[in-house]
Length: 319
Image (cartoon, rainbow, N blue to C red; front, top):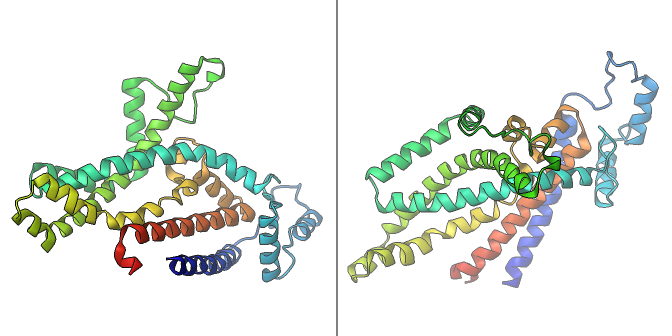
């Protein structure tokens, strides 16, 4: 077990090193430079641009820029080119804004997907299964931005509550219960919208896994021995069908920092996805590279957690 974990850690570190190199090259080989002079802005003189290039090492070879960037990143000295603020401070602020969306969306996705997928597999071909299949494909097919505007119109029209931003303007002096309820209303709609696609996809995956396990020999043997249907479905079939989801569970960690550009832009939610989009438009390389690096770290941590969990729940891996 320790050798398996050790090999996994070494592989993740090597992977992270190559990811950092590839992401750095892709960002810097993209068209345009952050030091390009805007002819419509008289503040940017050639002297200022040259001083900017020297200060941020843009006049040096690419491999030297790579070393300088990750030296500053690991020492906490990386700053945004847009506002000269610490990149890690900006990421932490936006991370705290995206965290409630991620938590509520993940809870909705995983608590609704499994009952829908399991019941669809048990009652395969019946009314519930057909209805769930139709709704799932409908949610997958509808564009997220269109569905968002439909939900906004319905909620504002019938419930008369604001849903744009993190809180209603002027709520700073309201009582604590009013502020809490206002925050819930602002949080519910983007979280629900972010969960719809996950529910549709994950419920289909749960259904297919259950159907695959239900057709195996040990399940048929359990039925032949006269076990109650609930024991066959939930104690024998479900436990084995859940093994692949151990791997998927570790892969939800990148959602902590990835956010959703479309949802956060439509609802004016100052989260990670919106910050990354604004950094791309501004060619703010330190923010873009740091977000990419932290995302890669979260992906590798998630896969490592999945490896360890799989090692614990599946004896075949230990053998």
